[in-house]
Image 1 (cartoon, rainbow, N blue to C red):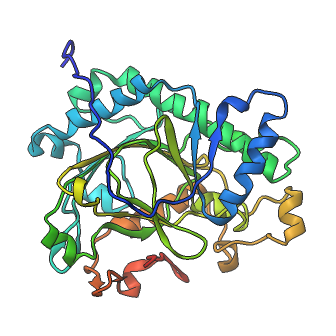
Image 2 (image 1 turned 135 degrees about the vertical axis):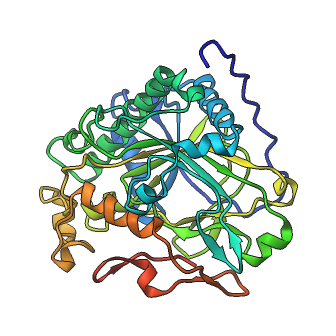
Length: 373
């Protein structure tokens, strides 16, 4: 569709409901290049990543106009007829751990006969190893999409990796950066994500949730600000709190691979997607996210040359305790396969707890996914 004009994306109003909002820090990345700025940011980051695994960043050098263009492209993709979108879906690939391309809603039954209401379109990073046919509406803007993808990496992910390196007292602040190079083969991807509004009756049958409590499998996830309240995090007290849309920010959560590399020091954040509050319950929710992961060859053993980890005795993780030394590529494959393969629907209790059969949660012998209720 060359030459087609993509209309500007208009964000809906934020909720006026009085919700229990999470108390999260905001890292001002404009401090990053200032004298002593990195050290100041690390002080702020330390508590957040050890206890919650969620925080905001601002002043990240990606203009809001560029962010809104990605929302507009996501909107255009999801407005395509289903039969057109299905050209970019392969069920067999999905169930064998290949997650790029399109995943339609209704891929699985959550419970009580209610199917999931989320559509996903993943665009792998442009490292030369993930050649895929894209829908014309996206292909016409693929250079713009690549530029945005690379900015997510360079302007946000790389800076956070250096801050993590300083936190871990590594001898070289670029050590983690070298394990997360954009142009080296890896599973990073940009995602357009669409949640369709449900009826109150349907929401009640699935515990008022769009997605139950879980962690992400990579290093960090970037969630660009969107106004439909739905994301909730589990804080250090085990309470579920809503994540407030903050203007000019990205919400960041730390993930499983980073937890593995740090022997559990950096928390893999527990989060879920709740049905929106009453004044937004009728609105479909569109998200733009970027998932960063270590390069495929990186072995997810605890980092050996971190003085901090060694002082704390954090020299093992859930993989090494099973005698496993997984690369990122192996971890992504087994975790995605567990997530996407056919499974029985959950038993959902009256208070919204999801209970799955143990075999459906097995990632590897001795290692099971956790559903955080």
